[in-house]
Amino acid sequence: MHRSLIPLTLLTLVPLASSAAARPAEPPAVQTVLTPVQEEVEAFLADAEARLLEHMVRKERAAWVLDNFITPDTEVMAAEAAQGFMAFISEVVPASRKYDGTEVTPVQRRKLDLLRTWMDLPAPRDPGRRAELAAITARMQSTYGAGSYCPPHLEGRCLDLDQLSEILATSRDWDELLDAWMGWREVSVPMREDYTRFVQLANQGARELGAADVGEIWRSRYDMPPEKLVAEVDRLWAQVKPLYQDLHAYTRAQLVKTYGADKVPERGLIPAHLLGNMWAQDWSALYPMLAPVVATPLDLDGAIEARNWTGQAMVKQGEGFFRSLGFEPLPETFWERSLFVKPADREVVCHASAWDVDFDQDVRIKMCIRSDFDSFQTIHHELGHIYYYLAVRGYSPLLRRDAMDAFNEAIGDTIALSITPTYLGKIAVLGEVPEEGVDQLLRRALDDVAFLPFSVVVDRWRWDVFAGGVQPQSFNTRWWDLVRAYQGVAPPVTRTEEAFDPGAKYHVPANVPYLRYFLSTLLQYQFHRALCREAGYRGPIYQCSIHGNEQAGKKLQAMMALGATRPWPEALKALSGETRIDASALLEYYAPLRRWLRQQNNRNPIGW
Image 1 (cartoon, rainbow, N blue to C red):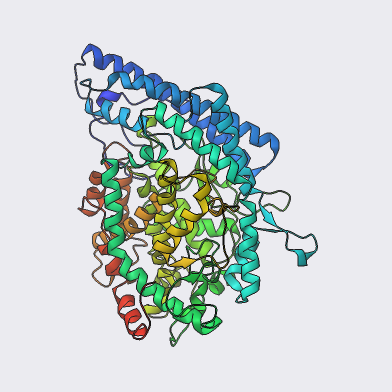
Image 2: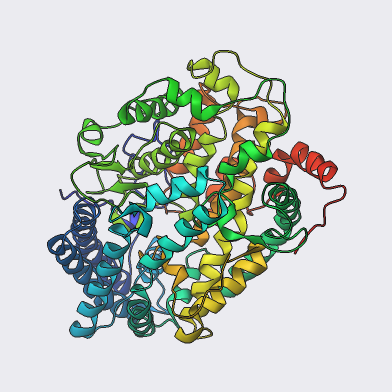
């Protein structure tokens, strides 16, 4: 579907939408006399945006089909759509360089800057190499999506990622955990050669667009010089590292009790397969082992399962939270076209994702929903994306996105922070509502705090690879060096360069930038603190739920409605009054837990 574009020269101020699902009204006209060059830029951008929208829709539709019907044919279709998008970008971005140093309007300059960093995967101008890159990308994603491991003892029965992940989450048998952990990493071995070529071709495309490499393009999206972004990441990690080290030391000590000091060192690195997650990025499965003794243990998984909700019913509950803040109902097509449960008749990519298929009304999620608390929270995360898509759908294509990629990731997780026991009692998930305390903080920290270093590792590795600092013969070595340094985690067995362990994480073969998740984890606590204050809450922020508070909802919608029209510090200020990402809200949230961890770690060594 085509729509008329908002006149580029008129978009100087963005009105606040009355609902995140409401189309933003056009701002009042501003009489601006354009110079001849600005008129030329205006025409260039209007044409570029119209074509950009066409390619975005075509690529999104093909990717949806590939993820839901993994076949050689859909792989070719997705590759062809991606190739067309790459060809467009490789043509239009160099053409935009004509206007470097030209005096254009502020809106035109912002659009030109956004256009130049739009593509996660820049492609060579040469049609043959561009086709090769598109085919490699589709092939790696298909390999991941269809991946499975066939343990010898199962006599031909194979396990997919969900089933292997379930073993890692529930088993406490060293050998069974090791087999599942190693088995999934067999899936990524064939990607190694493809990824090597992928880096070469993508970097060629980046250089043709005027960047040093792909990593520089990614780091140029944050309204600051790329080198400053690296320094910001270091600053933020330094803020949260002491809390992570406290959690790491406590977890390691409990694992020593379970597996013995001969398998888990009392000081040093934790074996990666023991942390309840395929990538050691989420330790929440270990909660039963790590939980403090409380008068009323809270079984959130059991509480969700007892509701006997279908996948769609769980999503309806998530929509209900957003509705309580004043958001509009989701479109009917969302319910008709989303994938809520894993089909029995085919392989699909089960990695949860939100989709803006036509960049207008056709929004969807794709999930293999289970009746557990993790899926319940993930639903809120994905709906945060959906409502952000709807909030900005009235803008022209280059501005029809979030203020910064981490903002989009943070919205749903901000809502998830309000899924407190009190809220769960309101919706009858819990009968008796226990007092919220350290036990619930620990449960959440095993997800969010444990995740922080991994969320730095993925792009630190790729930045090094794209920049040429890590050659193919050192791919795996560098990966595990970073995992050891940031996470304090080690492979349970020797990993050689015959393996390609980075490819065992979806975002690497799918080429999805990952720094957004580090920043969004911090931002969600900033957003939460600001919204709790807006709601008039004055207690500990870990006990705050904004459910039902339309005043907080208006504040959130106002920030989302800015889209990409303003640099992200301005969007952050609109919500929180702050202009810098900061970990102080996260540290405030977990302050009671940190005091408890320090008591528990009285005799435990800290660090590795």
